[in-house]
Structure formats: C-alpha cells, structure tokens
Image 1 (cartoon, rainbow, N blue to C red):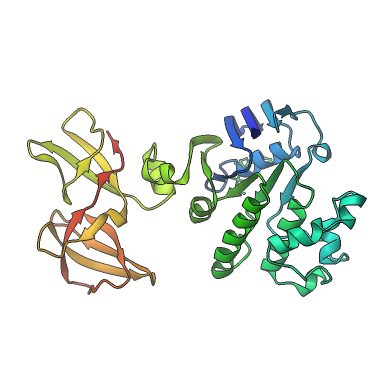
Image 2 (cartoon, rainbow, N blue to C red):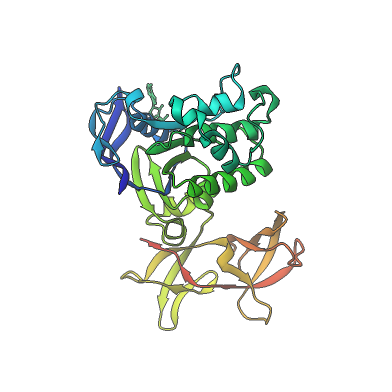
Length: 336
Ligand code: ATP
C-alpha cells in the first residue's frame, strides 16, 4: 500500500515557485527522507501534506484516499516538530496519551510507545525534567501512539548536538520500524537522510530531482549537483585514449562512457586511494583534515590541479610529503 502519494503538487508564493509539479510515493512501513538545501521547498511540501497549506495544483493521497481538500485535523497525520512541542503542564504519559481515545488511553499503548523510544518508566516525569533529546523521544512516542497512517518528522534533531543526534537517529528509526510506522522526514542533512531513510527524495528549487534508495542516490547520482549535495565529489577532466580514459589522476574506469573524446567525470574522495606499491600518479600533500575515523587529504597533482582524498584515520601522512594515487572503482557520472 502507498501511505502517501503526491501527484503534481504545485505551490507558489507570489513569484516564488516553492513546489513545482512534485510527484512522490511513500510506501507503507517505510521512512522516506525529503532532502534538500534551505529554501528548496521542503517545509512547503510538509505543510501541504499536513493540510496546513493548500497547494495551487496537484493532489495529496493518504492511505489511498484523496485528502487534498480535507482539513488538517481530519487527516490523522502526526507531526514531530523541530523542538518537541510538548505540553509543559502535562506529564510525559499525559503528553503521549493526549491524542488517544479513552479506551486506548487506559490500555498499555502509552507504556508501549515510551518503551519503544527508550523511555520506559519516565511517564510520571514533567517535560522540564527531561533533556532536549528525551523531549524529542517523547514527541516521537506521542506521534506513534494513535497509530497514524503517516508521521511527519520536521528536522526533528536539528536542535541537538552531534553525539546525541547520532544515537537519537538510530533509536527513532528502530522505534518507527518496530511499530510498523510510515514516516516522512524533512532534512537538509545528507548524513541524516542517507543513514535513516529507506528512500531519499532530493529536492532542488521546488522539484524532486532524484528519488531512490540511499545507495542509488550516493552511488548513481543523476546530476553533478546531486553528486555534490549528497556527498563530496571530485571533478576530473577525462580524455579517451587507445589505452582507456586518462584523467589527471591517471587511468580511470568510466561506466557507460559518453561519445566524444573529452568530458568530465566525478569520483568520490574515498575512491582515491594511496597506492602502497609505487603505482599511480605522484601527488604532494597540501593539507590534512583530521576527522578521527578518517582523514581528508588535499593533494596537488602533477598538472597542478588539486583533489581531496578520504583515507583511513590511521594512515601515516605529512604535509609536504608525496604519495602515489590510484582510483578505485568506476567514475560516478560524466558531464559534457
Ligand atoms: P528551510 O530548510 O530553510 O526551512 P525549505 O526547503 O523548507 O527551507 P520552504 O520554507 O518550503 O523551503 O520555502 C520554499 C520557498 O518558498 C522559499 O523561497 C521561501 O522563501 C518561499 N516561502 C515559503 N513560505 C513562504 C510564505 N509564507 N510567503 C512567501 N514566500 C514563502
């Protein structure tokens, strides 16, 4: 079943086209991320789905029923906002029970969803007695409680620090999965989208420019813009020679090569590897960025162009030193 279907959704504010003909299918029981930079239309899309905004054209279907003209409070869609939005005068349990009918409220659903988000035995607390991360967990439990056909997560972790965010992403994903919920996550954070979602829809200027599983978006971006938005990309000029495709980084495999003798290919920094056995192009280390588990190394190539390689954090490197480089796997895509 399709939990959410958007057909030709279009919305403008004066001369600003916030949504342009957006089609999207969110299968039931999955987490779909809407990923895009600031101003690309993510919030407008979320508000049209929730019923808080009326599209100029197009349709919204929830659980295979048209809801475009149904008011927000009758869509039964739950929203987890950026910052919890808990009622301060209600306990955690009362917050979670808020949208439930009397029969469900007296059953064990409240305890069940609190346990799912890792807050068993926190029902008697007050919101001000919880950390920011715990408040977001309660907000997710409250959204899950009435088993809505769809949960909207609006940048739900953006106010939290990085370490907390990683744990929360994992736990929230597991809670949604365990409860069989369907969720639409809006985020500008590519790590968040790639690590949490079953499907990612990348938006730019009001349009969905690519939608698919995270691995497809990362490994087979349809455009250079998608390639650099969902990760780092190194752009290389490529020339067809009798021996293969030559780039400033040496010979590179090109999947599905275009016609013509000269074009541009993209590779990910982690495809650029230091060669241990003296093969490959010689490069000079210009700079090293330490990220713990990996290093981002800026390198100058013999033709004076620079590239960035991502290598394991344990690699021995020194600014000014020289290394030999090879490219693993095929180039991502080519542009003319
Ligand atoms: P952010 O990540 O910064 O929240 P977003 O991707 O959610 O951005 P939207 O808030 O949907 O983007 O905005 C899309 C475009 O529509 C932007 O150019 C924005 O300035 C414009 N816009 C949004 N709401 C309104 C409004 N009420 N009136 C006028 N223009 C608006």
